[in-house]
Structures are given as C-alpha cells and as structure tokens.
Image 1 (tube, rainbow, N blue to C red):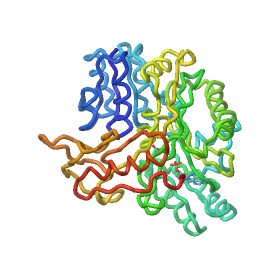
Image 2: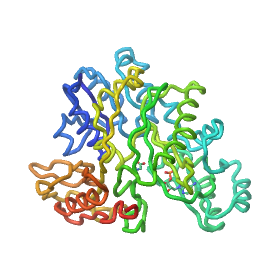
Image 3: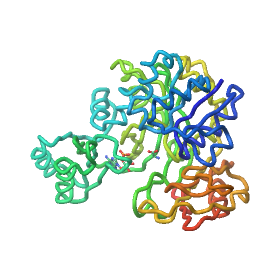
Image 4: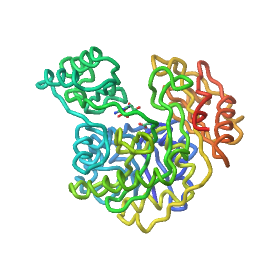
Length: 424
Ligand code: AMP
Ligand code: GLY
C-alpha cells in the first residue's frame, strides 16, 4: 500500500523510518518532509494545512493511508475534510477528527472532559474577557504558584507558571484584555500548580480498543539541569524508570480507560494517538494535558522500541480492529538527544552546513529542521537533528546518544549532555 505522512519534524522522520520498514508499505510519501526523510520515501512540498494540495497528492499517488504528524491539520479538520469529500472519504486518516482534536485544541474542552469523566487533573476555572474581573478575584484566592493556560493552540507558548499574584494578574489581563496569544487566549484556564515529575504516555486507539505504546520522558528546558527557557523538547528517554507496573496500572485504570470510554460515551469518534502529559505526584498520576498526536522528541525514542509492524497497527486504527493486532515492545532503552541551532529557542542561526553524520556509530540520525542546499545538508529550523540510540541499559543509551551527537558539527550547534541522567 501507499502511505502519506504529513509533517516535517523529528517525529515524522521517526514515523517514516518505521513505516518504511513494513512489508505492507510499497510507496511512502512525506509532505513536506525534510532532508532526512528522503532516505525513507519521497518528499512532496505541500504544507500540512493545504488540504486541497494534499487531496491532489493523495489522488495522484493512489495513497491508501494518511498518517498525520502534527496537531495543526487535525485541529483545522484534515480528517473531516477527507470524510466530507466524495473522492477521499474511503481513504483512512490516522489522527482524530476536529471534535476529538479539541482534546488538544482547547484546554477548556479537555478540562471539562476530564471533570465529566472523573479523570484526575488539577482544579481549575476558565475565564473570558467578560469575566476578567472574576478571574482577578479568583487569582487572589488561588494558591501560588498558579498556572495560566491560553485555551487554544499557541505554538507551545500558551502556558505560564506564575510565582506571584501580581504576575498572575498582569498576565491574565494581557491574555484576556490584550490578546497576548491572539484568539488562542480569548479564553484562559487558571489551574492549580501540580508538583512531581512529568512523563508522556501514548495511546493508540481505533475509538473502541486501545494499545499503550512505550511511555517516555522528554526534557523541555534548553539548559542542562533543566534550566533556562522552554523549548519544543531537547531529548527523550524510554522506558521511564519511575513508570513501573504499579504506576502504569493506575494510569490505565484512572486515565486511559476513562478517556477512551469517555470519548465513546460522548459520541466523539477518535482514530489516532492520544498523548497524555502526566504528572507523577508521589506515585499518583494527574493529567496535565492531552495532545491529539504523538510527542516530539518522544516519538523518536518510542518508534525505536516498537518491534512489531507499525503499519499493521495503523491499519488496526483505521479499520477498527486494533484489538486483533500485535504490539511488541523492546525491553531495551531508547535515548534521543536533540541538536538545536545556535540561539534557539530565541532568534536562531539558519542555513549552516551539517557535517559528520557519517561518523555516527550506533544511533539513527533523525532529521528535523534540515533541507538540502545543492549537495549540502543545511539547518533550517530550531531543532535540527534528533540522535536516537537503543541499548541494553539506560546508562549505555544515554552515553551513546550523547557521544554520537558530538560526532556531528554545524556552526552554533548545541545539545544537552545530561538527557536522562537525572533518572539514573
Ligand atoms: P502544556 O502546554 O499544557 O503541556 O504545559 C506546558 C508545561 O507546563 C507542562 O509540560 C508542564 O511542565 C507545565 N504545566 C502545565 N500545567 C501544569 C500544572 N497544572 N502544574 C504544574 N506544571 C504544569
Ligand atoms: N514533547 C512534547 C510535545 O510534543 O508536545
């Protein structure tokens, strides 16, 4: 069968690497892809939100299955677009329709959903411009720190953790009255701050049954020791040692089952991934957020621990028989180190030639923000490469991924050398 992956990051590179290995995959296309995805398939320069362009490609190349990487096309309704189109409606899309994608697209929607289905999450209240005064009063009674979340998609920047009441009130005003995050902050969720250690849990569902993929931990801060500004993600490891059988049983019973059942009860069709951002607070799971897609850079580690045919699992999601499919997970440890551009996550360097990838010994170099410039591979994004290795134990995996990252060079290159070392 012919498969199309939408997206261009490290996550989509890892998907492409895995999908290309399946005997079921004849031709693989990635739109738009990056300099690395051409190793696994054919790049087509179409934006993930250009639905008409995607349609033309799907028909031209006789695509049998579409795997959606990022949230934006899902929240904008790419799956609904397929279902509403006579020529596309029978071509399965892995990724939820717009309604289900609201789990990520609206923080308020996801909080209401969790409250309704008794899924453990921080206490909250939602405010709009009209209820700003109530919000300011509420903040005065809420404990500190307090978390403010723009309701809509804000490119990962819409969450603010405020340490003082003054800061919280200033920010709430900026979000609601001055549209700090545009339309995304026309509604703001004010939420209790949770303490503990975070992890990412991934579920694949056909809307009825589900499979739990390997969990992962990602490292969001730019600096070693989890310091400095937030980024899209600087590295990941899987498995997560503190996510032991006892903890994962609680996650399954208190979060995963009520989520999948809740979607069903609410009549929300859902074929795709559910990414559950969790806080482990003294051994108890609390949901921080849902995403309607896989995580990046978690996917790079997760794909490397899946031993079964991933396309077969995707077909299970698409055809609604996921319960008949096999998911085999490697007991080994996967580690990913993300190499970023100089200056990232602020204004960053671009168009720097990347050298040394041929010297990498025991990792896969998944590309993210890269492009071809003649014969050269150059940097184009903030997150440039994701170096992923699999080893028998966590220590070797962390060491190998870091060693392999240091074999690659481009002007301004930076990566954290402490990914996962807090867990050893
Ligand atoms: P989100 O965009 O919802 O993933 O939030 C970004 C980050 O903010 C999360 O990964 C957490 O590190 C942090 N965060 C969000 N909500 C809370 C909360 N209620 N308590 C503590 N930290 C939070
Ligand atoms: N790694 C976090 C995310 O993909 O949102």
